Length: 176
Image 1 (cartoon, one colour):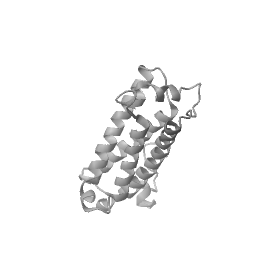
Image 2 (image 1 turned 60 degrees about the vertical axis):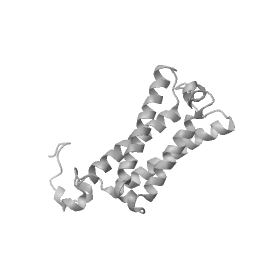
Image 3 (image 1 turned 135 degrees about the vertical axis):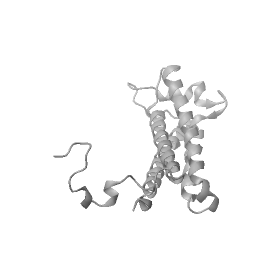
Image 4 (image 1 turned 120 degrees about the horizontal axis):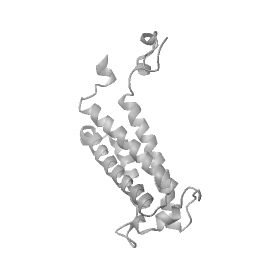
């Protein structure tokens, strides 16, 4: 009988990919998918800003329009750059970096670190914005929270990819 923490008795018969952690290629693909989700979210918020339309939001949960229209919805206060634009630019930069990571020599060497720095910045900025919306504005925006969750996951994956790259965690090929 196996417990939840132990492998089944025939674990040796399972393919290696089912018994080990995800490899770099899977983490890269997951990062790409999450980045595309972030582009859709921030792209939608950018669209609503550009067109002046109301954000589709479940009113019982929060008020996206109030969050986006607040002074915190702009870098530099009212009249500054809308945060939605910054989010879209950030996700597009991450997308571009992921797409070029294995194609440009400099990025092959430092791309994971640059990605880590970008996602760390995005994570910290998202954490700041969520904190402001919940504790200062006392409002929430489902789109903003989804973007923050997406960026947080991207940050964690980029941290693990850097950890692998510096050799602290052996790659699957090294384990064999």
